[in-house]
Length: 483
Image 1: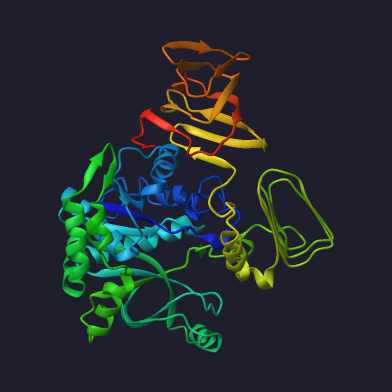
Image 2 (image 1 turned 90 degrees about the vertical axis):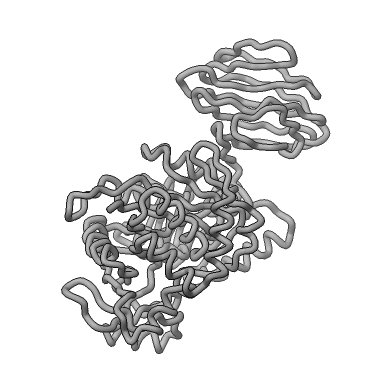
């Protein structure tokens, strides 16, 4: 029987602004260790051997169409390539996403067990997690729908809960009830009783069993996703469900669509079971959560990046670019990025959603993207701008190329800092080496390529009457982008 990780990579996580942006969501951030949350999720079960000698297959990743190159590049960086990447044309919550993954898994192996994991969780005790997964997969092989309940440590009001039912052996329980997010008093009662676990959104389910249950309880979701999947298009590892049928699919979570209905219907048939998980888990839903799990100094501070803290305690200070110095502060969150700085009292950090709303209402772009913009060929960073000019630092990956394009409103000067560039300018093609430059006149068809095995770095100076990114006419693009 095949074991297939399914990684659900939806959502933007604006509660972690200014690091998380709509075009660079939470799961792509590196907050603990050297890997992003997405990469850590993919590595969590990589190469894992199960009890009967089976190994875990390459994952199925379900994510937003707009993040496709970021998702693929982050997976490539950790050596995960040639895996199904299902691109949702729009967000429809986790039940349709899992149904798409189940259809893909079943086409590969009819009885495959899916280990379903959100891409934006942090789990620091990898061994405890793998031990729990082994238990859950063993139960899923018998047709059970297995969820993994997080051992609660505080009376948390921000999570749903799972009430334990009858014990099933040493490592699992029948699910008696899924419970909505409680108030503070109820959460304290749950914690004291020892009968409740946090609902972490991690599952082990056979693909065929999930498809049977979604058909039984939500035939509308089953039909819409099946139509979208059957009419899919595919290029390389990108699988694109039909956008019209997927857009018509109801938006529903795994719990609401199937798990809660099964749990309440069983008297109990024992179909829905929970395996307790104590693995230093966090969904990093807000900056407070990162402070709680972070490594603290003697004053209770979590300091990340180029930070100096004097007479400061119980604070999270994160610098991504510049030196940040804090003096005489207590219980604050400070997050610095090249284009925005957040300073907040920890007790009021939930109001960050109001900041994000005000930025959007003002028509500003700081919630959309970082100053450094990732592209399938590399990245660029706008390091200066003014009236009729803009300066960018550009990095092009080895063997990569930008589109063949022209601009109606700007000219460009290119200076190569490192590596060698192959430049197409009108009818001519030539090389530009380190410390050399070239000029692209307004309205000229051009292309920039990196023909070498080393990274190409260059400075681009744009000049003209209009310098926004939508002034691009593409004639050819290796990545299927239009414009």
